[in-house]
Image (cartoon, rainbow, N blue to C red; front, side):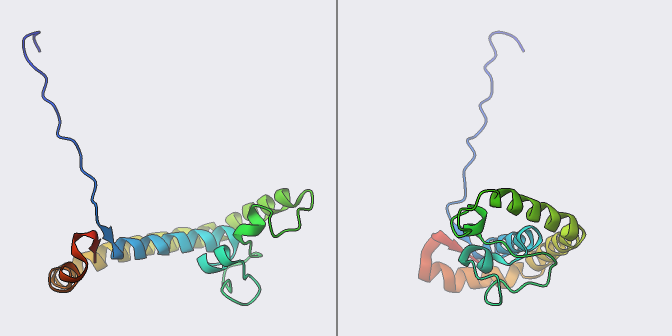
Length: 140
């Protein structure tokens, strides 16, 4: 390139300004896989703290840890409970890593197949129902 030649400027990249419901659903699936594998409870149990039988009933091995226990609000503030929580998370990760990998791969494949199979029906719903009601802010 010589001194007299001007550099080409790349176009600025634009972010999508809409919220995709399908992307949010699959992201929630990935977050649920992580919370079950690491904390031994699903998303609702992790956030709400019901790990005994309520929202956090889970099929994975290991005790359930809620968000309040993780940051040591609901754990009574006893010294050393943070280290116990970290040891529990490490043990849950070691025990649940193979199932987490299988679930993540399965969800990834499911997401791709779902989006390719449902492309035309979802665009029809987007065009005829969602866009007239909610505008361009929400996508299906």
